[in-house]
Image (cartoon, rainbow, N blue to C red; front, side):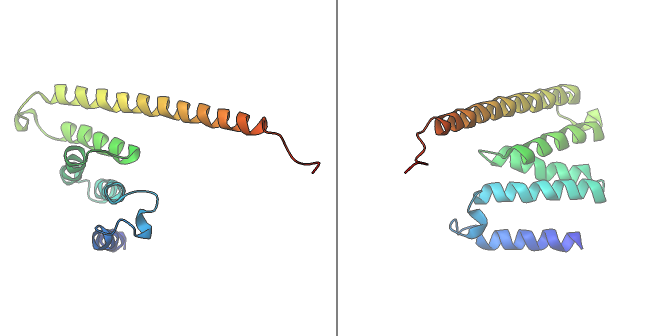
Amino acid sequence: NVDELLDNALKLLKSVMNMPSNELFSTIGPAGRMQQLDCQFIKYIKATRGDVTEAARIAIRMLVEDEFILFEPYLTAIGTMIEYCDSVSSEEFLCDSANVKRELFSIRSLVGLKVKQHSAKVSESQSHNLDDLASLPHDRDQ
């Protein structure tokens, strides 16, 4: 049962949240792990219940409370907020929902561009490192 798996994952994460040396956090910190889990909750809630409002509650928490957000959870949260704007009537917004959606699309595009630029820099850096390694003298004859 996926509900149980997600609940167990949340319990596990909460039980080790104050132990940064835990193996669970060897590559990504506690906040990042929570974002990954929140991302899965968002996807699951939308896919199984079609409850965009509940998914948006999770998404907005991440967007408002977390200082840094991993790429996939960030895009999932922004996309969910865009879906939420589509799902509620204009009367429920304190401002124009079209403007909110436009801003969310703009943010999502900007993030995608930044990630592409970062990926290009990392790729370029890795190729320079490989070039540097290739130019090192090899001690095959020794």
